[in-house]
Length: 111
Length: 143
Image (cartoon, rainbow over all chains, first blue to last red; front, side, top):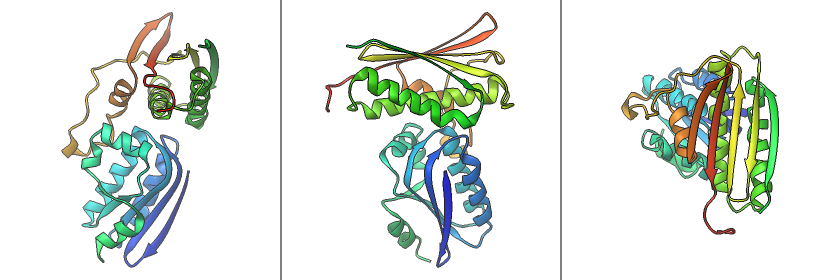
């Protein structure tokens, strides 16, 4: 899985591409740690993530806790149906702020 | 309805997770003779990913030693997947979801498996772990 980050007005837009599973989850966590030091809010663009399992969920929870601990927001954007299904199944859709797309997510943070 | 069987043996390494999921997807599309069950096939792939990860991490301790054997059987409306490994015995508990407020970073896998297939069974026999996942594919083709 590829992870790329762009910074825009105090928001780190973390874009993932591929499957978010036990193999790739450490890469996601690494990005969350790197940008979750208090300087930025986070928007995680999941438009190109077609698969997620519990290891991938764990990485997102890790990110949420990392940014929250710094008093920053952590939002998911463009969640695809397969990924939404897993979030709903585990009821974690209630734990995350989820936006329709990246623009909406960034706009709602209102930096 | 075609009857298909497949045996796929892979090293106990996370590097093979995608290949296992892809193999199960291809098998399901072949045996179901349709791509109309994508959501249900995804659920089976999800269970497979969780189970394979558990075997690699817990039965084999994540040391990338050993192998996992997958035997698949499908009859056109149902798929049965048998997983065999020679790792440590698995202590099975009733799967439950972690408390949402705790934001636990683990404990979802067994619950996801249970919810994603119709039947999950486990036995330890002849020094091997044997997991069976069974899934019925329901609904009219093309829906």
